Image (tube, rainbow, N blue to C red):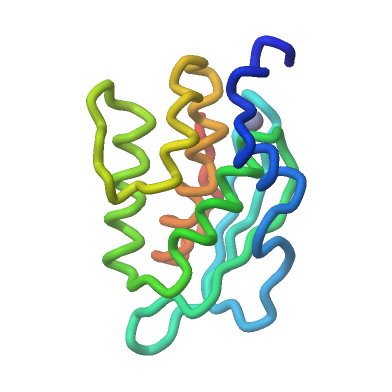
Amino acid sequence: MSDLRDLYQDMIFDHNRHPRNFGPLASANHHADGVNPLCGDKLTVYLDIDSQGVIRDVHFQGSGCAISMASASLMTEAVKGKTIAEAEAMFEGFHALMTQDQANDAATGKLRVLSGVKAYPSRIKCATLAWHAMRAALHDGGKPVTTE
Ligand code: ZN
């Protein structure tokens, strides 16, 4: 893990140690599971989407490495209060941020702290897992998403 020290910026540390919106969500009407077998990250994303298509609340629970947990925590903060379409756009923006060399979309805001993960390709799936699960939950998933 020592080679990852550079990744552990303050915000990632903070979100891993004190994940936001962690735990089950009683009002959830959508959820999906995500698994990253390469790292052992497993999580479930819960969404409470109202009749207008607005994400009223979002929670996650699970276990995994610091990057997967911090990314999930940041994801919940990012999509809460957004519409389904906005959350989809944020997924696309984050995915581009993590997989393209020249992603400089200001809309990704503080999610950019995770862009350092790109230096460690095997860790990109840790960072994107929660986002894949969130997108699956928007469409009610069904089958668990896996990064493999
Ligand atoms: Zn991981």
